[in-house]
Length: 296
Image (cartoon, rainbow, N blue to C red):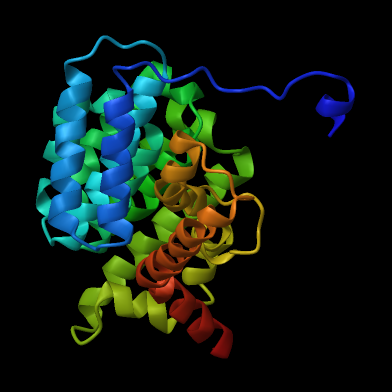
C-alpha cells in the first residue's frame, strides 16, 4: 500500500527469457508429478531432463542455479520415495561436478537422508570437503551443515578424534560459539564413554544405553543440536524446516503464484498437505524421543 500511495509500482522480478520458459514448465510439471500425482519416477525423469536442458544453456543470471537447485531438491525426494537413495549422492555430483560446489541446503538433505537409512559414512568425505572449502564458510547454512556432519556422521561412526579436530579447528570457530564448542566436545566424550561401557553389558547396545540415560546424553545433544534444530517447531529460526519447505515453495517462488487468487488455493492446500506428510515421516522419531525423555 505504501508503494501505491507513493505512486511507485511494486518491484517485479525480471521476466524470464524465452530459453528459461521451457525450464519453468518442466519444474512445474515435476512439482505436479511429485505432489499431486505421486508419480515419483516421472517426477525424477522430468527433473533429470530439466537439468540436462540447463547444462546446454548459457547462464543468464542466478536463476539458472536456482532452477538447478529446485530440480535437485525434487529429484532427491523422488529417489528417496523410489527407494533408490543409494544413487542420490552420485546423481547430485553429476549436476555440480565437485563436492564443494553443492549448495548448502542440498548437502543438508543428503546428510539427513543417508543418516536416516543408516549409511552416514557415504556422506563423510563429501561433507568434510564441503566444510573445509574456504568459500563455503560464509554461505547461509554453513553452521547447519557442520552440526549435521558432527551429529549424524562423526559421532554415530565413533570418529572422536576427527570430531575434536573439527570443533577446535577453523570449521568449529566459524560455525559455533565458544559455549557450543564446549557442548559439542561434551557430546563426543559422552558418546565415547558409552561405547566403552557397552562391552560390559553385551545385551545393551550403545544406542540403547543412551536411551536408557536420556538425562545425561540425549538432553546434552538435544539442548544444543537436535531439539534446537528439529524439536523446537515453534521457533522462528528453524533451518531444517526451511530446508524441506524450500522444496514445497519452489512452485510459488519460481512461478510467482499469487496466494490471493482463488485459483491458487488448490495448489497451496496440496503444498501444505505434503509438508505435513513429509514432516511426520521425517521427524516423528524425534518427537517420540522427546516424549520418552519427558516421561523419565
